[in-house]
Image 1 (cartoon, rainbow, N blue to C red):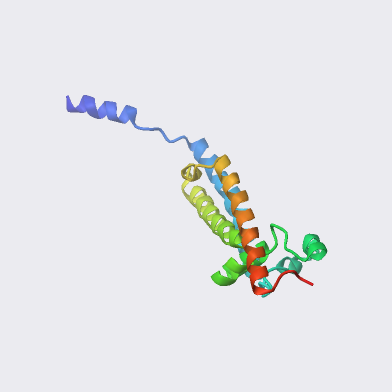
Image 2: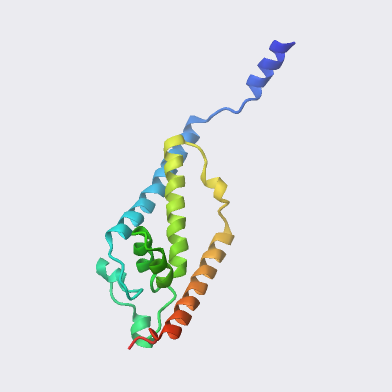
Length: 162
């Protein structure tokens, strides 16, 4: 009786599909690679004390919106926030762009998930429950961060930029 139950347990146990594991490892590498690149690049950059402009170190042009209006665009301060987070300057990162802090942490989480999938072959990304709510949350956070950056700039006299 017990051997029959043991045989059934073995038959009912999930079978690991080696091809699926290889695919998940590949996906893990595809996730981890760009995320690590962003983290290393952010650590290489020196965050600007103005709270924006760090992207200029990459050879990119100045923000046209800021130059025309004197006010930051919704993404102003993102690169500075990432660089400040990579250097462990949390307050500077928040003041540069609060959403940048959240996005940097999301990149770190994704790099970790990618590493986990690469090393184990397990489907770890499913635990993040990707979906439309991520996009809505990211856009909302960016707009709230932009509002904070403008309000903080007006309150401290930093804005408008001359």
